[in-house]
Image (cartoon, rainbow, N blue to C red; front, side, top):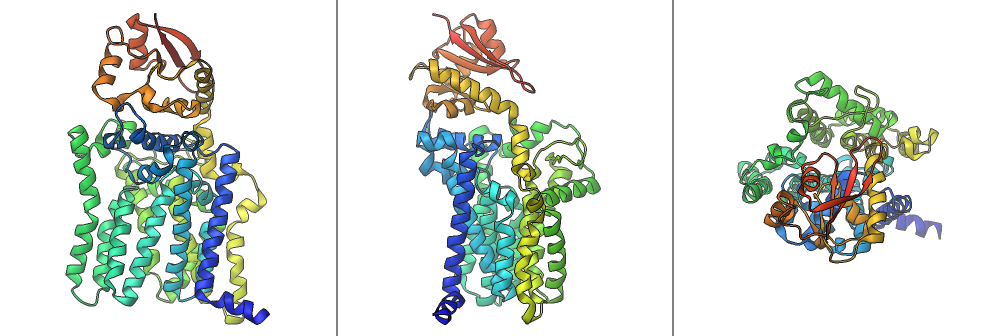
Length: 504
């Protein structure tokens, strides 16, 4: 009986099935935990991603144009099958479920890639466990954010790369192209990796190397070319995602920050973010694993994984994309989650330690994932999860006025009365109050919005209006004489949210 069970467990198919089941269980538990504690929509970006997806199917002008220009669209598209449900939209699960599926894909492909790269099942298990059980990865796998979706594409690409090197099959080239397209439609990191992935396939091709390079580069570049064409069609500016009014560059508006045009500071801040996301033990294990991989000539995949952290350092230095962490000035939280790329790198590297352990002592290597979690064992609280803390600290004011405004509207708003409001953070109120976006007139509705928001005294179709104090819309509503301020919601650290009602 024991030998039969051992035989089943040694079967590669059975092992992989066990990995899939384990990752599904872990993902489901993480999503359930965040849902039960209402953490899913703590990130303002998570709420925005869901609202964009919802507006494609629920808007006064639904359709393709609602997809926007700054955020790349894959997550919004993945959420479309679920976001039409009012219940799944309002609690955030419409975005959590596809992201959790991407977490499972990332873990499975990480396992297969590590097994191929290290020719060791134990090394693959170590790498997968270090990644999959990291608390910051688990939190990001439970919320509608793009980091895990990107990592899923990255590990699919890495699997295609190592399998192509081993088999030279064209099917892995096709797989790599689709993975690159998915990455490039999720985060701009994917654009940066296109030339490197094309170079990899070209270098390891045994025939027609330059043709293979050109094929990958040409096909994968379709994603950024499409997005530039999309931005031009929507706004008249092909670079709207980079320098438009809602871009990271516009948000910073030239304000200096640590790391801007300072390589040393950019590296220091990103390294600190990576340490907070991965934990110091995993960083040290990753360094040790990197040395082992280099000694055994297995460093190529690790070198490729280093490219994403390099991209973030470059973005801090040159693209107006800061990272703030609580341990360095200005001692706050902003984009700290970008350090999760270090988790993927260090986890993959840690598996290489298994390559140098004597056969009779290899079971010690299975303790590596436990050691990687030591920072959270000693302090088993959600407060120690930096990505959660970032979302919690930055959303205190927004959650305060969102909850109060949603409760107010839920008790007074009648379907069809109409609401004039901007599409930014205020849209979270309608999500929480379960008010269809087709009842809301916002920037994405084109001329109707411009007419109502510019001259509410002449064009006032909506009975209600919401605006933050001091905003252009708030000033126009106050001076129009067409709307009365009915309710102000004031919370520390944010402008008041004003609720207006049209005069009879």
